[in-house]
Length: 203
Image 1 (spheres, one colour):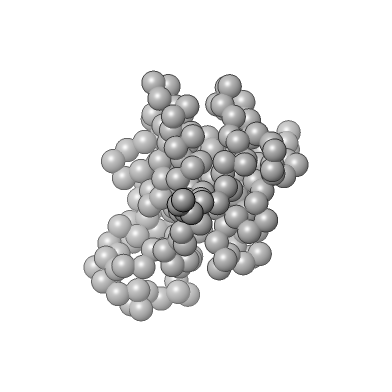
Image 2 (image 1 turned 90 degrees about the horizontal axis):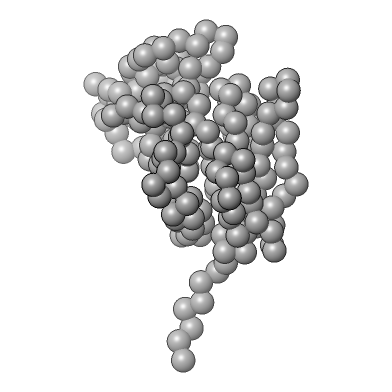
């Protein structure tokens, strides 16, 4: 059993079976067997945005078959070309928000397989490399919709695959717009509300 992050060999490759034995405070993701340490606890703005999006999706999904989950929530992705199964899977991520419409993909440990929607909210520590890696990861895993939320510039881009399976980004959803998706018919996310700053002034 690994109880300290420093005990890990970052040059090695690991599987989900290894991941289950790690008992340390740091949050990590496993991508094709390689360990990626996650950013520290999200800041207040990140948390507010996550809460607004999740509350809107959650309200819409009331009494509907799809389910929504928020981080920390393990998503195990059997990636091509091997698509290994069970505890030999070597990719485990914790997106900010996921929507899953196939109950067969859920077990007591989380999700196994591609969620229908993955939402990632960028943090100040995210690098361009990390963003590229995640986009390629969800594309290869066959995630139908990948939402990238940018708190700094206040927009959301939705990536969906074309006929070749390559992600194509939407126009940025920004002020005055509503994000809609065929996965959630009649759902509309008011972008103004997503990025609204609370006013704590009291008269």
